[in-house]
Image 1 (cartoon, rainbow over the protein chains, first blue to last red):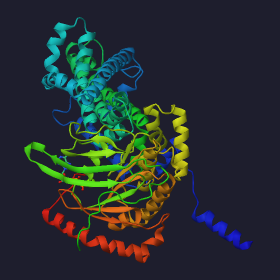
Image 2 (tube, each protein chain N blue to C red):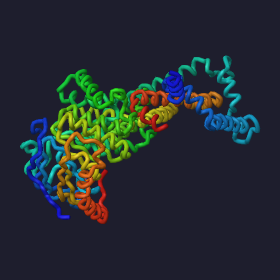
Image 3 (spheres, rainbow over the protein chains, first blue to last red):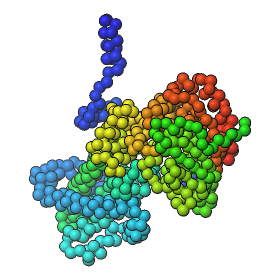
Image 4 (cartoon, each protein chain N blue to C red):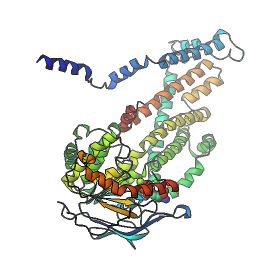
Length: 299
Length: 291
Ligand SMILES: Nc1ncnc2c1ncn2[C@@H]1O[C@H](COP(=O)(O)OP(=O)(O)O)[C@@H](O)[C@H]1O
Ligand SMILES: [Mg+2]
């Protein structure tokens, strides 16, 4: 009896199996674990180093050529001020409008580019014939830099809105299409063979092999594509914009409101980061198989 | 050692499956010609595999074993010769490429479970796309079969989350659920350690005793071949031909104790020279296989 008790205690200690943490607990566990590595400290140090240099150059030592640039203290004070000196802060209407307009344009452009590019890439990868038709055109249009499209876009489309959307869509469309195509071509031949053995018809192969198999590349492509969309959106807004963060940069520059200009730049960095985090999150949601397999490899 | 070639019919009890899944390979030649350079992978190769037999194909890397399997499965066309499955012509003159079908299920050299589907969905896939079973029936049957193979607890996991041994087993279950006439396995246990391998062997034998499906099993491990097979066909180095057929008349069910028995050792010795000879030739020729 006592023998049994001892062995069960032993088993409890040695073979203690805790339920694997999930969701927020998992994030917390990872955070705690990361505190034991130098990574978070280096990160904090890096941020301070960067901010410190910025501060010293502009507001501290007022180095020549930097004295006109608004320093971190000035920008942050202005950003959070309810009564901004230059008329624009986190609490003013025009700032909200500019952020809102840019985000809306990105949503439309990125949505269009994804909605057109992913199916096009999938079909090109799936059907040799279709690729033969479509690929040459795509490959000749793709190298044309997006800024070279600006005049044509203005001539082709009326108003402010459509040319901007067109430019942002075009750039990310190419990226998405090409990555999706590469994604299909990267699928190991043996999956197609297995699908054939198992008695798949063509449409089964498309939905069960081509689409999921290309997903990792598709999402890598979307990560790049959202960056490219922001890039071309801001360029377009600076040239022919009416509202939007790119417009805010150009407009502030014209009237020497450098603080507002830097604010718009910081805001761009921030929303750009959020949008690509959203794309990554969506990718991980859709590819649990990959997330789990990579997690086991300790990545 | 004189190469004894016993192709042709042999008194083999065509087990419970009632004579289903006999393969007849007659004078098959396969020449690849990428970029105009001919590579002869299989040359005038013939063998007879009885229904319900476990036929082991042994040969050095790069000799053309996978090529032969690919021709049977319908992934590659053949250049000359013909292959029959139960007196039905799979491929031959005028029809170089066999039609892929669920009567010949392949377990691939590097594993080809769909990584984006759970083990359960992988196994249920075949009957579902063939329209044999509804989706929910297919999943029920898949779960039963996974449970039979001891994989019930991991049925909902993705292939990337389970051990290679479990994935292999699931892949065999995915093949068997379609009730194939022939199971074609391409070095399925190649990357495994000896212990895992012996577990896999016992599981395969257990599965075979249950289903009596014809098995075409490629390996370069002679002991594996003798332990599992009803016969072991030793192939020459590229281009592949049958060099020697070793009949393994050891009764089933077999277990690992067989490995230390006298009759097992004798059979291994009998085939060893033939295999070794070809291995040296392959090594000297610098043969490479296509992964
Ligand atoms: N698709 C292919 N195109 C050209 N040559 C090939 C192809 N597949 C295999 N080979 C060649 O055929 C020979 C036999 O290969 P393989 O059947 O894979 O050997 P094994 O499976 O016995 O190791 C090798 O020399 C290999 O390079
Ligand atoms: Mg091979």
